[in-house]
Image (cartoon, rainbow, N blue to C red; front, side, top):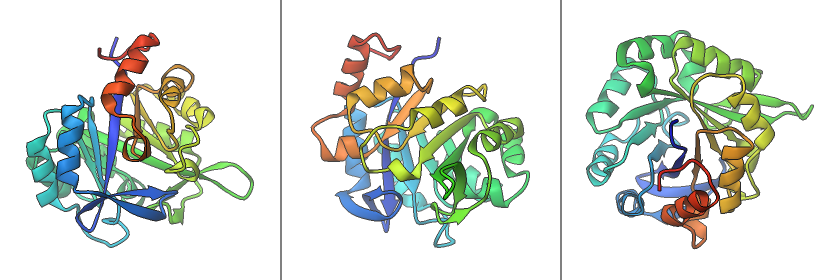
Length: 252
């Protein structure tokens, strides 16, 4: 059985590591390369690295920083932000990414996930789904950094992305991102029960117990978080020890 994974998130804006709240307000949290080096020393299972303004600004991920981060990491690197072509994916992989995260382009470019997975293999392609609750309190998929409503149901969209060839799904509830009030277990569980690929849960982790609930109640294979590591005294080593001691299937 595959081990569950602890994944810190590094968000990039203007060459700096930041932390957002509900994809909006943000705080500078330091140099991305230095932060990546710390997470590497703390034995994180993987590192998620997202250039959050790339899509909204109509540009590509800052590859020079990706390369520098990759040189500091001896763990798998998941990289996303503005990925919209096969050449974008190839470039990120050449700069040191192990997996490439695709969000907006999966919606705006029909067949892109299929072409990408056929070219690079499903294990390389991670589809990211950002979700808000609409006025009817129903879950709905958003793209372009959470600014554009697609009208799509996240469960149906996740199934479609997996059918296209995505080898992994990241699910984020925007309403909880950065507020540290817990994961939306119902949303996570609805995705994990509907697809046959690993699901990374994100958005709302505020305690080590939230990690445990994401794995045990949500059925996620990985939980990704940023604020708990930036703004509390927790770190990946402590997280992994807590989970291991509570009988979660985690690498000791």
